[in-house]
Length: 509
Image (cartoon, rainbow, N blue to C red):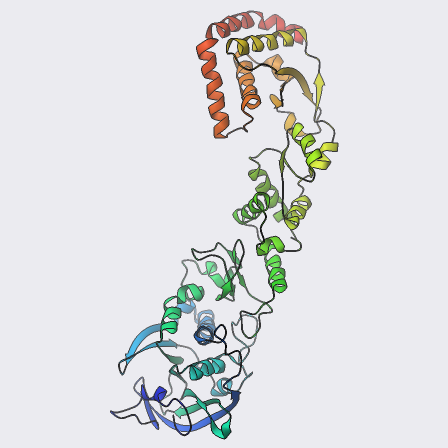
C-alpha cells in the first residue's frame, strides 16, 4: 500500500524480490503494476462493527457466494456441478498461511466490484445480487487487518483503510497486468476464525459438495433433516443461523436483509409455512404430527398460522395420523367428556396440542371426537339366541376353570353399514362387554370362536392394543392358563360342540 494506508504489509506477501516493492506484485507468475489508489466513500464504520455481525464470517460468506454463483453458471452452461469449477486450497506465502479460492469463470468486471450497489447479476437464481458483498468483504478485511488479495481479468485489488482528510474510509490499491487470468482468484490470510470457517465450508456451504444425484443438491431442497449440530436456516444454500425448529430449511426467496441473518420471526414463519404447502414426505409429516400430539412445542413449525394442504397432501396427512394411532380408527380430541364417549365406541382419540396442526388434520378429513360422539352406532345390538347363550356359557366355564376375573358380559351385534370397518369385524371389546358378530358365530368352528374369545378377553384384562408387546404377552398368559387348568374342559366342550354344530347351525339359521 502507498500513502496514508494503515496496513501496508498486506501487499508484501505477494511482492517481487527480496524487498517489498508496493509498485509491483507477482501473483501466479504474472506481474502486476500499481496503477492507482481508489478512495471510496465507504466509512470504516459502515455496517455493524460489533462482534456479532460483519466479522470474518461475513467476509468469507461474500467471497464464497460470488464464486459459487459463477461456478453455478458454468455448470449450467458447460455441464457438471459447481464443485467442478471451484477450487479451494491452503497455501504458504512468505511463511504465512493463506487460503486460495479460485474459479474458471468469466471474471468480475472491476466496476461491479468498486461501486456499491452495482451488480452484473440479475434473476432469482443468484445467491448474491445486491452489488455490495465483495466490497464489504474488503471493508471487513481492512479494518480487521486481515490480508486479502483479489485478482480477476487484468487487474488486482488490495484493500486498506485510508485516513485521508481525517475521515477513515475504505481504499483499494488497483494493479494491472499485461497477462489477464481466467476466472477469479482470491487470497485470504489464514487467521484462526478464517481457518475454522474454511475447514467447515462443507457445512456452511453444502452446495459445494457434489451429490451423487444432482437433483439432490441442497439448493434444490427446501426442507431436510437436521445434522448432528441441530436445525439450521440456509438461504440459497448458504448457512444463515441456527433456528429452533423440527427441521432445517433452505429459503430460495426471503426478506433477509443485507446482513443476511436479520429476518423477522413472522417473515420466517410465513416462509416456512409456504414450504409446508408443498411437503409430501410422509416421514416429515408424521414427525410433525407426532410432536404435536406428544408435547407442547414452540418450534417454528408449531407457530405457522395455517397449513394449506393439497388433495395429495391431505391423503398423506390422514395416513400419518392413522399410523400414529396404530392403524386403528382415530379421531381428534376436543373435550374430555365427549372423548369418553368416543372411546366407548372404540375410537383412538389423539390430543393435538398445536392448533394449526389440528386444523390441518380436520381439513384433511380426520373427524373430531364431538362429531363421533353424535354419530349413529355402526352396529346394532341383538338379543343372544339359545345356542349363542350356550356358547357364552362355555366361555364362562373356561374362564372359571382358569380362575380369570369375572365381570365380563357377552353381547351379539350386526353391522349397520355406517362404518365399513364393522362389516368384516368378528368381535370387539368395550370395557367389560365382549361383542360377537352373529354371522361369525353361525359359520365358525369352536376352535375359531375360542381363539376370538381369548383375543377379546386379552383386551378386557390388559387394555392393550393389537400388535403391542403388552397384548402379545397377555394373550400368551391366557393360553398358558388354558393349557394348565382348562385343557380337559376345553376338550370336553370341543367334542360336545362338534357333535351339535350341524343342528345348532340349522336352528340358528
